Image 1 (cartoon, one colour):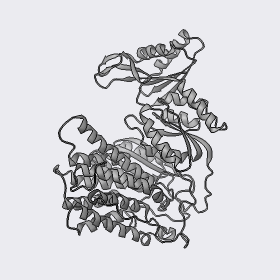
Image 2 (tube, rainbow, N blue to C red; image 1 turned 90 degrees about the vertical axis):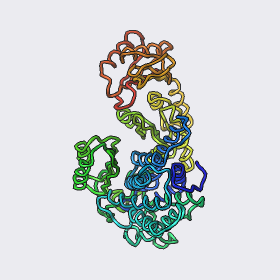
Image 3 (cartoon, rainbow, N blue to C red; image 1 turned 30 degrees about the horizontal axis):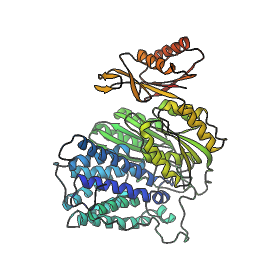
Image 4 (cartoon, rainbow, N blue to C red; image 1 turned 180 degrees about the vertical axis):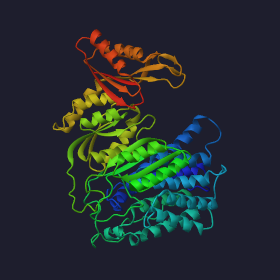
Amino acid sequence: MAQVPQTFFDALAVRTWCGLALETLGRAREEIDAINVYPVADGDTGTNLYLTVESAVAAVEAVFAGHAAASGPDGPTLADAARAMAHGALIGARGNSGTILAQLLRGMAQVLAEDDPAHADGQGLRLALRQAADSARRAVAHPVEGTVLTVASAAADAADGARGDCGTVARAAYDGARAALAATPGQLPVLERAGVVDAGGRGLVTVLGALVETFTGERARAVAGSAYPSPSEGRVDPAADRAPGDGAPDECADSAAVPGQEGPAFEVIYLLEAEDGAVERLRERLDALGDSLVVVGGDGLWNVHVHVDDAGAAVEAGIEAGRPHRIRITHFGAGDVHTTGAERPPRERAQRAVVAVVPGEGLAGLYAEAGATTVLARPGEPPASGELVQAVRRAHAREVVLLPNDAELRHTAAAAAEQVRTEGIRVALIPTRSAVQGIAALAVHEPDRRFDEDVVSMTSAAGATRYAEVTVAERQSWTMAGICQAGDVLGLIDGDVAVIGADVAETAETVLDRMLSAGGEMVTLVLGDDVPEAVADHLEGRVREGYLAVDTVVYRGGRQGALLLIGVE
């Protein structure tokens, strides 16, 4: 991370702020989760804010890495970094408060990137904070006071009255936000009854505290999540009646929590590529379907969040407006997160669970049928460590076996495992490098066996499985098998290009022959959406005719990136 303090708001300051915000949210995440009572006490606000900022950090770091790789004398501009921050937050936004935070960052970026300045001063920061608050409020269908929107507006108001450099303006915004946060229980009865401040607002204050540290080098004063000094004076513990990781949505800025009153059954979130006019029509349709509607973004890319009873209708509305993708639908369950939950007993922890990263919807279903908790890794969108941590919590077990199923996710999975171990969960990371190795590990998984024995058996099965994939080259490049051209079919064995061909079936057959030349008892084929069944039939026939006593099993993987995954045990 860059050194602090920063003098002006330039690209380096954006990078520093994002890094500090991620660190401070990491420290405050559990407390923010615990005070999340409005309008659903599901305890995910802190985690969702953390994941949103983590995505922003990754985007900013990618911009800096790109400029470094170009070996140019100059780094990214303020506009480059600010737009990357906003885009990363938009595509990685989680939950309602994370979606609103993404719009706050987008509003700031619109000012910071205007006319591509070298840097912004105190006046520029004031304008950015005002644009952030105003644009976030416009993004929420029915704003309610006492939420993160109130805190954002107060921060902008306080900044408007400050004169001086970026440090002076940031501190004024932070102090204004703290005061507004402390007043939120008086604006929302549900917060007053629970004796807590608004969780989303608490998260925003944390992010603004990181902004103060960016420009002053001084860590901002701690903020209490409780509205009252002692939890013994009738304060309700919002974490007492929830299991860690239960539920997916977090603070909703436009829906009231009424004890005993149920809300919509589903949370629907998706990214949407659409024109502005289509999005306006979409807002009207979704507003009629449900509540907690937040639509953020612009320039053709939007993040849509809504609570509805008819999830299919919400997705269909997105299809009519444009091209929705990264669709996430969460069922709240009967009478749980949309009520106070006071009568709901805590869920008993399982003894053991498996958490696995999978590259396609088809494999996600297969793994789920085998009892695993899955994290979907879409092409070009690997999961962050926070998503793996969230999945481990969602598995709700004392012991967890973690299958990253990708060599490049080894460090991400290790970081996630280290974090959840501090929460008292016993985690074993099996370094699976492909989903087919994960399938082999799951096949020998026995939850009733001693943990160490189970891990050894699963590790052995994964290690005994050679893996390959067939894909299409995107550009000309040097490989272990020679020079490939864009459009060539590539066969990779254990991560290295071994075959360059022109036909999917022929390339796959060559790869399979090379793998089986070293022996094998079982062939696993996982077909992507673009591969016809005839390819699987051809390969099954090849195995049946050329390799006695070798069985073949075929699965449909969905949109998994590679055309075909092959495993040989």
